Length: 215
Length: 239
Image 1 (tube, rainbow over the protein chains, first blue to last red):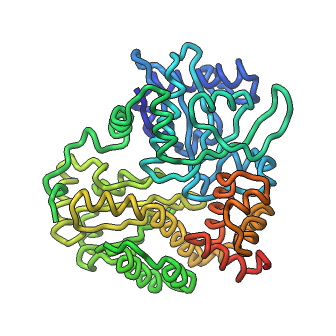
Image 2 (cartoon, chains in turn blue, brown):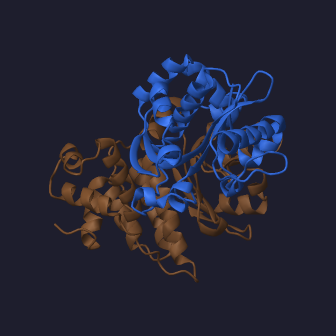
């Protein structure tokens, strides 16, 4: 299932969180060879994890991490502005309607549908919070994967070459994109909404009598 | 509730504001324009002190402080340190203290529906901009769907303004526009359609929209027309 968890609440999902940070080390350091910090518990974290970001996490049936990504609003510190500004003429992207997506990660043994479910999770955030765009920097090999998932970014900047080539992309919300990704992922809008509501309210807490009052 | 709202006018009032009293007036105008009962701006500073102004009755604000409701208010608990806009129906109202608080709030005409926008400012500054109203769920769904993006932007612009009032802070410089943003606004100001602008700049319309959106926020504008007008008046673009 998909979970939407702020960093401050990760302690409630400890095995899930630990395996997420381990899988990030495995993906970004071991497999992609990025220059990221891995601690002695083999967990990868950076300074943005300390800014209370919102994670979208696929939780496997056994409670472990299947894949995840991380979101922060572009009104605060984000990698696109701090680390990759050269990909956008050195100018900042900043709007409460644009969030940055980083650390898109799949565990080594992730089942086929996890990437699609995560993509739908991103669109679920956009739909519910009226986010117009995501911005993100990614390895060029992701371009084909995003296309296959039904949610391709516009690439507005690239740098490096070969293995080190990275791109700055922008994704735009539309209901059509949401429906397309849901169909490709094989997940109904109802199912996706339920997961979202379970994490971010609306499903578990009974509405108090006084709130249900009609005008 | 209002369907067409004169946001340009609201933003003119916001620009001209020089005191918290002006902003209180502005919130009244926002409520009138959007056709909702209440609006509140709530600021938590780095020392953890709370300040608020808006349209709630003085009686309710005093009571809220006296009873230290800030500790049980699900809106505060659910929004603090977060950054997504929150419909009050999604909050956890199940604790007894929260239910009692809710009843008291309803008795003081706060309204049964609310939409709160958390804002993370610089150096740990945190604020909430809230709109509340009395209506049924269907009407509130329609309202938030239609107006949430405008309210999100207004909340952030108001926070920017409040930060200007801080004694040790001068007004923020308008962030410089990127060359692409200037090109886009200039061509739009010249009457080009979005499609023509995108074609001229060899970018997709989608990317163009991001340039416009980014420029709009830097300029404190609510729509493209307003962004162009501001860019011209600030001398950022010439046509």
